Length: 112
Length: 118
Image (cartoon, rainbow over all chains, first blue to last red; front, side, top):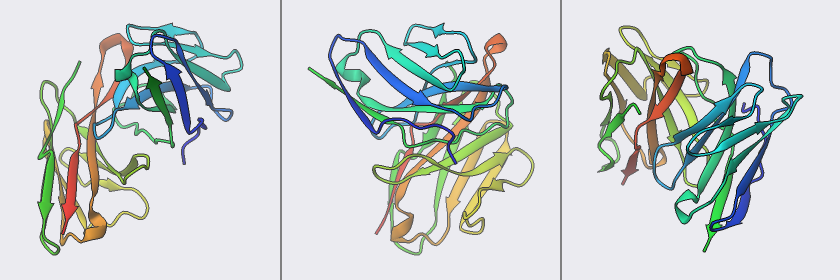
């Protein structure tokens, strides 16, 4: 079973920041938080991951609470092409055999 | 980033026939690949782990004789849906882990295969 809970859907205005929350209250000390997104009828796309520190890359920022029980993915300037289902996943870092268990995700709808 | 390619992108087959789906890692080697199934408006469900040179590992509830997996080389895994029925109609997606150097291992996904059984 997935170890994360996310709201089923969210709306965001184009050009504004999209903040997607994720709860992972049972996360273990050696588990990282990963975010993927899936645009309709395509394979998932990796966005970002982190352990305890906040992370930023060209796509997004990841904010992890100090107790690591929740996190927020931030898309700083959402565009219509960011409309997708966003999945928050916890898993052990690295390892070629580690499989990803997907939860239900959050459908982000970016509105013009 | 690393590229994982699936073929075909979509396929329609008659009930009772078998369908083979290919998953290739185009610019890297993958000793392990994963196969997922996704029904409309649902999340991805892991079906099995494909292991190069050895038997696949199936998740609970997935029929191994129904979904045959072959990982004959370091860049190719195939999923064969045998004696397909309409309830097998789904979106099938593969993924392969790719070592990103110091960044660790990430999963890259194929574009998916839409199977429709009529």
